[in-house]
Image (cartoon, rainbow, N blue to C red; front, side, top):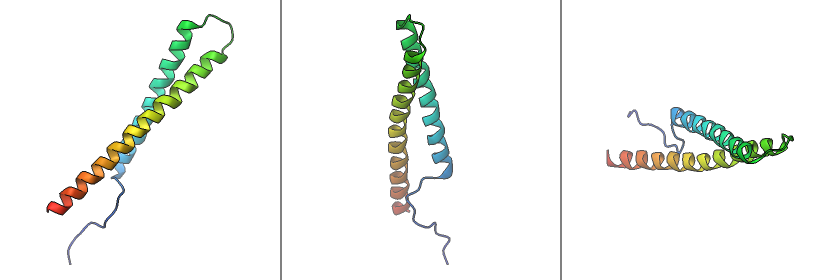
Length: 87
């Protein structure tokens, strides 16, 4: 009986946790950038534009980071698959 790992397309739990944290950090960075860009350009009394800049920046940056994270997780899975075939 061999001690073979079952076939799975899922990345390791550590890789998934790191991807999730990177998405959160990307969203936080995007929120800060969006808020700051609006804060520099807007002189009014309303906080609505600042909030919109914050939300839109967070969504765009988190979305972009999520795309990169998914691509990295897929590439890691393919590398592991290739390594398993060679051994």
